[in-house]
Length: 92
Image 1 (cartoon, rainbow, N blue to C red):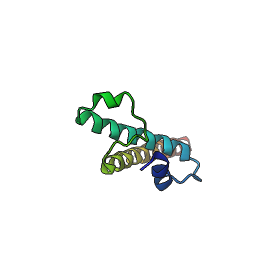
Image 2: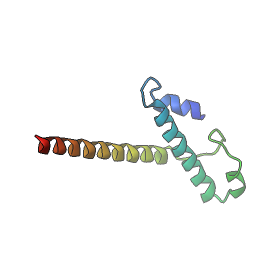
Image 3: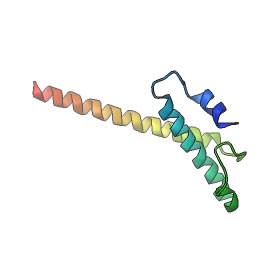
Image 4: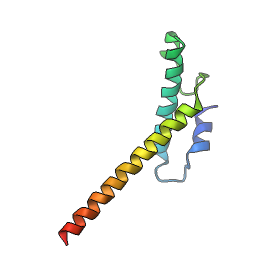
């Protein structure tokens, strides 16, 4: 599956964060493909592959990383919101 096909399946291009989501998707897919090539000892292919190179990868790995990043971002947002509320409450 091409990178464009993956992005069209997982990223809502009308969303304001679509470019960031596409960038994270790209990095995660490249990391998964790199992992496959390293594990298989395909060192020569590492220097020349692109995101659209026909290198297999586990979609579970990509989805797991995306879920991890999403949870991390959500935790950071909640912590920031909590600090903001605490600061605002103490100022009153």
